Image 1: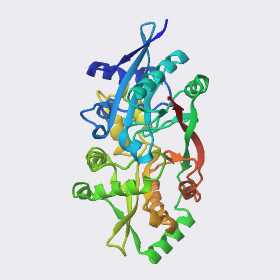
Image 2 (image 1 turned 90 degrees about the vertical axis):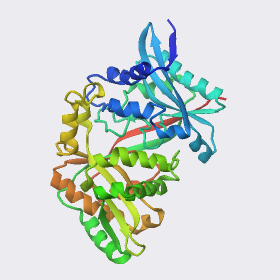
Image 3 (image 1 turned 90 degrees about the horizontal axis):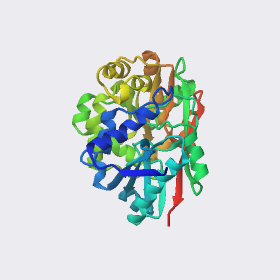
Length: 380
């Protein structure tokens, strides 16, 4: 029987779209499911401010009358304008191990793109670069993280079998045991940098979240990533949404800002890190905080009942990158990781070609344990 593709049109169908991932990965020891409430907020067109410049449709695949897959088709008009492309993105791609299903889902994305005047399909990507992106192509036996996608090993196999899909970009991720003390390289360099360039550590306070300072942190993120693959700078409405939604939930001891004392304490760089929620989220039944999921998340996020720390966003304005300012960042954060009892840290996606970013781990034991890929296909 052929595969039936159905467009999501109701709130109930959107719930089915979100829940399919929980069902497909039930019992998987490596998948880290997103919270249902976060998924709903991201996918709802009246909640996600990215719809100021994005449009999207969601599709469900049924085979023999049974739900077998899902996918989101997304057009980010600002990204297309920034990079002078006509791309339709695919994201939230999940399917059973059946190439007829995966083919039908991606064909639906391509058809949507053609109708909108697009000439290529690219993904997995989200609405913005702060959404999970990249299909896991190795590292399937490693625990996932909250900010990234986990997928079964047959996913990239399907991409190869379907044909026409080419590598557009690869990302790497690193696993790093937390050292017993700050590496001597970071300590020495931090002292030199502080004296030579008058750069200093600043810790964000709760007041900073409300007085606009935290918004400036995200503007630094914009400057840091503006020239990287597919990136489009966050709008002020997006920044406001991220600050209000996520900053209050962070442990601010694990957020460090580097400021320039020679330039009115202008922000030079920032490191946003947080306790790993991977095991806690696995204990949230079908991504729900109730009845007991909230307790597991709270224990990890607030009481540090977790062995790991996720290095979410680390970036410096271009003029500070060659000054070694990241040593100040790590000299401040590593003692906090040790005090909290963290055993390991994990970087998030880094372009394989970004040697500058990867070199910052040189003073630490670092293991490239995952790789993921964005694919591209011309659709004419």
